[in-house]
Structures are given as structure tokens and as C-alpha cells.
Amino acid sequence: MIIKDMLPLDQLLQHRARLSSRKTFIKFEGAAYSFREMDRLAGVYAAYLLEQGMKRGDRVALLSQNNPYYVAAYFGIIRAGGIVLPLNHLLAHEEIDFILNDAGAETCFFDHECSGTIEKLRGKNSRSYVLLDDVASAAGIAIPVLPTPAHGVDDISTILYTSGTTGSPKGALLTHRNIMSNALACAAAIHISPKDRFIVFLPLFHSFTFTVCVVIPLVTGSLISLLPGVRPFSRVVKRLILDRITLFVAIPTVYKILAEKNMPFLVKMLLNLRLCVCGAAPLPVKVIKDFEAAFKVPVIEGYGLTEASPVVAINPDDHGRRRPGTVGLPLPGLEVRVVDDEGKPLATGEPGELLVKGPSVMMGYLNRPEDTAKAIRDNWLSTGDIASLDADGYIRIIDRKKDMIIVDGLNVYPFEVEEVLYRHHAVKDCAMIGVLHGEDKEIPIMYVVQKDGQQATAKAFRDFLSEHVAHYKIPRRFLMIDELPRTATGKILKKEIRKLYLATEMKPPV
Image (cartoon, rainbow, N blue to C red; front, side, top):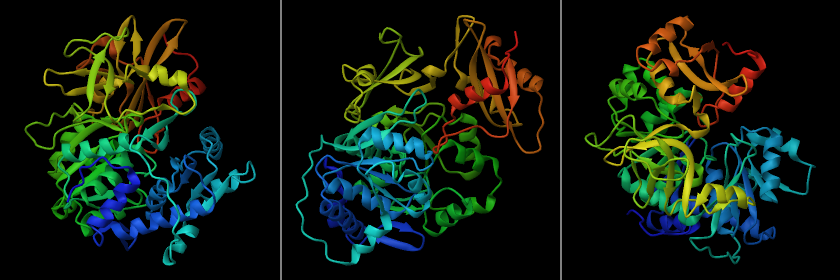
């Protein structure tokens, strides 16, 4: 039975545990956890926090790689009346310390893999650091009956910090309604059923992973095969086959690698796979075509951002309505519009900033009223992304607004050029940035990662682009690099690329 009610997240787990008590919810490293067992584990974490004197609204952090205790603790924190603060375990300890202090978290759950980071944080304050396993070991004993504060759907459930590509990270305040409405709409849009079986190797601290790969399976009663991470990929392949996975959720980097590999043996074994979903970063059309040609499974691209809990749009899962090159249609219940710099709506096909309105839009940023006022005006969320709408309402993401380059007064969107360059046989990865030349002139620079064994020249890349894009959009320089800096979810960190350019290429050419 699919849950369609708007419930607070802790009640969602409890309700699913009653509906599907013995059905397996999570498979992890040879162990299987039923919905009832996960509900009980959540109760153990809630009881621990209440015994420690946690008050309603306290913020509790989670610093851990993927494991079932992470999921149980997440819902346990909420059940005890708290607010969850998921942390990116790939951050440096100083970055984590900033977030913990900014959010006012007094307790931080962590796993063994993050012990080194925790040791660097201890002693800086009176915060309590608690090993997830130590609390879970009490799961076999009776849980004391303690009063647990009831939540309303409009209470804050989660504080998710943005990646901080511009300035310090900001904590997006997400309510139960924000996340639940997003999960319900996504599940309906791509027809998730109790028979679906998800594989989850993307990090649970990311909003895309948690909403799509944890909350949706709770809504639908689906199984998730949970892995600590994507490496080694042979482990992912093993679980795809043994757990008869039907739904593969990944980021563009994974699809690029799979599209490049020749794996006919894997194609024959993935007979249960019905759908692949891509999010977190743009996916070039060439990668979609190459992947689908090799694996005979449709890839649907979606789009979202943390501040929208996170999915805004997704392509339909039927072939006739799917439009590669777009991120699909807005989810049911969401409105979108494209506006110019003055906030005026633009005509069909005209590029401008994408705005979003609806029940999944965040309440605002923690302790940052000015940033909130800039981001949300008249209930419309400014995404910071340049997009266009076609006549049928499909959204095409063109680029980040801040990444747009102005060349001799003309707008250049790096992703448009990057997508074309990906079609060159020698290109494995690429990223274009704009750098200042003189006081007021920008020029485009392209960083390129070449495929193994390839040594194409800058002239070859320039000649290739000249056949497909306007002259003013062609990068003035092509710089070869071994690897592009990325976030944990595959987004290219152009801020880091700009730093690299300033450090190594001090004099742009005329």
C-alpha cells in the first residue's frame, strides 16, 4: 500500500512499520532490516536523546558514511523532538566545526570512519560526540516509555547546508511538509511501486539521495540496497544483480563512466532494471544516448536544489513524453517561471532565471534574514539557474547564473559549450570558466580532462567547436588537467577551478 497522507517524517516511518512490518526495508552488507526493525532502532535513538535531556527543537548532527544506523538516527532525532543536521563527511574538520557552531548543535552522532575528524573537533567546545554503534547496541533491551513531542507538518525537520560555492555555507530550513510533499510528488511522477528495489550508493547526507532514496521508499514500501559508497564499483554491480534492482539512481559522473565502458555481460544480467534516474548535476545528451544504446534502459534526468527539498522537475518515465536535453516538467504542485533581471516573466524559449513556487520550497536560511529575503520573494524561490521553458512547459537548464560569461557584451553559457565539447572523441571531462582580462573584459577558458591514451591539441578542440557554436563562445584557451574538482555528488567546483587558474595562469592572453 502506498502512503498518500501528509505526515511528519517520524510518523511516516511508524505508519510504514505498521503497514509493512516484516517486509525488508534496508539491505546492508549481508544484513536485512525490516520496516519494523528500523522503526524500533529509531526508537532507541529517540530514547537515548530524551534520556540525555534533549529539548524540543534541539539540533542534532549526523556525521557518517552510509549505513542503516544513519537512517535510524535521522528518524530517531525527529521522534525525540529534535531537528536533524546532516553533515558532509568529506568536509575538513574546520568546515564541519563552522556548520556545527552556526546551527548550534549540542550533539553529534558519528560512525567509526569519521573518528579522525571527531578527534580534531573534541575539546573545542562542550558538544557531545556519540558513536552511532554505541547507541544501536542497546537495541536489544526494552525501550523506556518516554514522552515524545508531537510534530506538525510545518515544523522544521532538517537543516541542510548548501555547498557554499559563494561565501560561507547557509543552512536551509526544511519542514516535514517540504520533504514529504516532494517525496509524494516524485513517487507519483515516475510511478514508484512497492515492487521497486532501489540501489543507494550516493551519500545520504545529500538532499537528493535522502528524499529520493529513503523517503520515497518509505512512502511506497520499497526496498533499498544500501552501500557505503560507490567504490569499489564491482560491489555496486554485485548488488544490482543479486538484489534484482529495478531503480538505479546516480549522478552524471557514474553514467559517463558506464557509457564509456563496454560491458555486454552486465547488460544481460540487469534484466530487472526498469529505470535510471539522474540528478545533482547536468547530464549531457550524448551521455544519455550512449548509455541507453548500451544498456537498453531509459535514463530520466531531473533537476532540483537543496532549497526546494530538493526535486523541482523530472522527465516523464514513458518514452513518448521524455525529452532528453531537458529536465522535464515541474512536479505536481510546483509552479515555475523564467524571468529577466527585473523579475519580469520572459516569453517561451527565452533564457532567464528560473523561479520556483510550491510546498517544497524551504522556510528560509537559518539566522540569515537578509539572504532569505533575497532568495524568496512573494513565495517565489530564486534558483540562481538560467533556464528556458518550451511551449509544453519542459524546462531546459542552461547554466548557473553566476557562471554566465559576458564576452564583448554577449551572454555565453558555459554548459552549452561544454555539452558540445563532450561529443569530441578525446574528451572525458571539461569545464569552462570566465576570467577577467583587464578591468572589465571577460574571456572564456576551458579546462579539459582527456581520455586515457588521447592527446588532442587545443587547436583540435577549437576547430571542433567552431563547427557547432558561435565564434565568440569558443574558449580563448584550452588547459589540460588530470581531474576536475567536484563535490561529493559530482558537481564541478568552478570556484576551485577559478582559484587554480589564478594560482597557475596569471596572465590571460589578449
